[in-house]
Structure formats: structure tokens, C-alpha cells
Length: 126
Image (cartoon, rainbow, N blue to C red; front, side, top):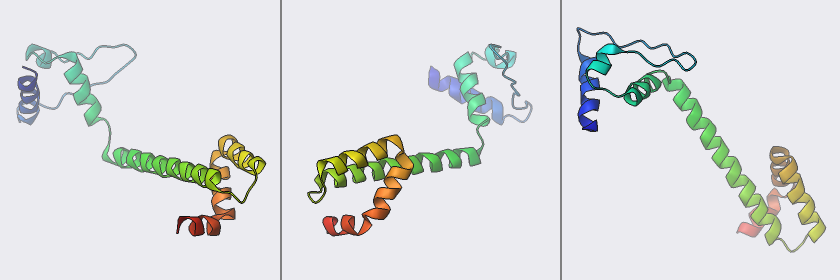
């Protein structure tokens, strides 16, 4: 039954005799599209249709870029922590200091660790 309703929405919007519904969302204001309600389309389906059409393509690309950058940064933090705890040439206090620096100042801590010990990381990975 739900699949039929989605087909009804696409058929309605593809019809040249009707225009795509313009919806202005205000605070707690229900979406009132009588022709879609009369066709049996639920309120949630109308809201999803509105949200899908109000999220531009460049915003989607920007969101993908941000999520990718966040994933890379989390990967760098995990790899720095693994490298810190796998090292035997620094003391426990140095390890604790690096971990605190990475937790308190995440971006600066990880970048400083990668710059300071980049040659050592490459040697330990090989």
C-alpha cells in the first residue's frame, strides 16, 4: 500500500496539468496540501518530499566532504593513539602527555604528533 502511494506522488508531480506543491514550513504549522491529502498521501510522505526537494545538490556534496574529513581525522587520531601506545622508546609520562594533548587539543595534538614523529611512524610501520 505504501509503494502505491509513492507511485501516486511521482505520477502527480510528473503530470503537466499540476504544478509541484510549494510548501512553506513555519513553527508547528502542518503542511496543508489538500490535493495530496485527497489522493490519500500521508503527512509524513509529503514532509519527506518537501525535505528532499529543499536540500540542494551542493549541500549534499558539502555534507559528504565534511563526513569524509571527519572520518579521516578520526582515523588519524586512532592511528596516533596506536602508535603512541605501541612505542617502547618513550616513557609512560610522555605517552600520557601525548594522549592528554590529543584529547584536550584534538586537531593540534594529532598534527603535532604527526609532524614530530612522522619519520618514526614510517619506520615502525615498515
